[in-house]
Amino acid sequence: MSAPLILASGSEIRHTLLKNAGIDVSVQIARIDEEMIKASLIADGATPRDIADALAEGKARKVSSKNPEALVIGCDQVLALGQEILSKPKTPADARDQLCRLRNEKHQLLSAAVIYENGEPKWRHVGVARLMMRDFSDAYLDEYVERNWESIRYSVGGYKLEEEGVRLFSRIDGDYFTILGIPLLELLSYLTIRGTLPA
Image (cartoon, rainbow, N blue to C red; front, side):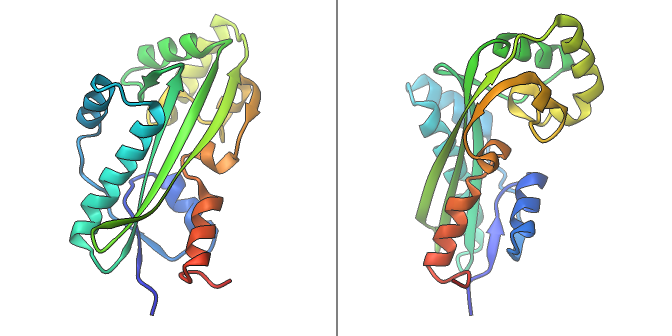
């Protein structure tokens, strides 16, 4: 019998993507202090890639310690504007400020996934997508944030590409699932190779 799969993330979109791919996965939200971990790593000069990986691993490790028999998938996403990390906006004004900084600029989304089993890491991957925002007007920006705040407050950068946020962009290079927060194709490939999923 295959080990049960647990997603150590409260992200509805990640859970939905896994379910839509035919994966029987339960959810257990990992209670870790993401902001403290992130701040500590930034102070140590960690790269955005390392930060995304460390946050995903922290979630997987926490849930795996309580479920050693399961395959635990930890995920996290980081938005890098150069070497600076942007977090989820706390207020509509914060979202507007982030989008102003991203406007007419390139940034990266780094989506990490780490799988733990028996309290040990078994697999990891960080997907990278590169995005270019267009030079939208202040009027559109204000209307966008007002219309979408209840949704974008949970997203780094203050946008959701699967919603109206797609209108903010002029170019996108990268995997769609990575942009949504999980390197799904690589994850499914690993689960198939190890025999968790049928080949």
